[in-house]
Image (tube, protein in one colour):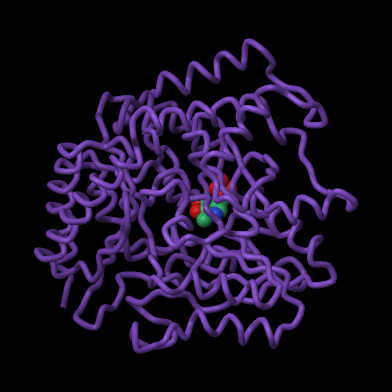
Length: 440
Ligand code: PLP
């Protein structure tokens, strides 16, 4: 650790870990799909950090747009209108699902989801329960962590009083209902109706259209349309958490577009500004917007609708258009998928490769029964797994991936080129052999 990292470690928190285990590398600059440490070592970013640096590093147009806004107006209370807010909204309306027509701007995905559950409860009052899935992450503050289904919520119990009901997820590689698609007849989706009827006071259902940090779980094609239909028929709001899946990651502006789903509420964050500045966005339908005409919108922050955050949004969308990025993601996604499948052929410790666009998971197993290298219980106890160690080895080789207990999330910046994918695959090929040695 250099002197910078020592001060950072001693006086700030390394999150989601025991502090003793945190050995940060000092990063000094970044460009394109690469970042560099203080020793000048180069790393290929194969995860877009936390799946949020979708345009890569050093995009001049986005930077210019932010600088222009800084010169004009750095802050004004959100009670005032600004040109930058108008422009951000007009750009968003071009790319959002048609159902979404009104926005609340905050500064993170966590806050976007906090606002979403508050809105759902206000609109559907006296109904107040929210359905969420076990294999999910929706944020870290009390409301959002109460929605979250994975082990991270265990640290924050007891949760917000009343109201989050969890359901199993469409994780076909390890079906929680021990069924097999398609013979299962979408039991996990149909179960939603049973839960709504028996819980009675359900205001909304929140789900990541493609589960993100919990291993890029792409649902079977009928899953989301079935859940959307059940929500409609039972007067329950459908909340799509597109914090990670939005902004071209899945070849579409938003993952719900893949299935033609029109959500009642859509939350997003991360790459809405390509991570040049923080943002959280809670988009709602016309009906929800109208509800608040005569009902108090009881929510807000000092940094809500911050002009600097908003200034990046139109520039990001223009960059997608200028670079024809959705087509690029489609082409590179196909190539990346094929290359990852080749790895699966070569490595017995790869149990599953799944994904869409530039959003993939490589899930590792340590035997023919698909036993994972580590579980959520291990993460909860702070244990390090072989997959963590191999991710660290990959970093030493100059490739960064974000990993779960038994999988890598492969989600490079959307601007990645074929030769950069090849570079990453070569290094993955090398380090995954370490896991093969543990396969029994
Ligand atoms: N929702 C999803 C699906 C996420 O993946 C994340 C973060 O990874 C969040 C919400 C929380 O967003 P943030 O970290 O910006 O608060």
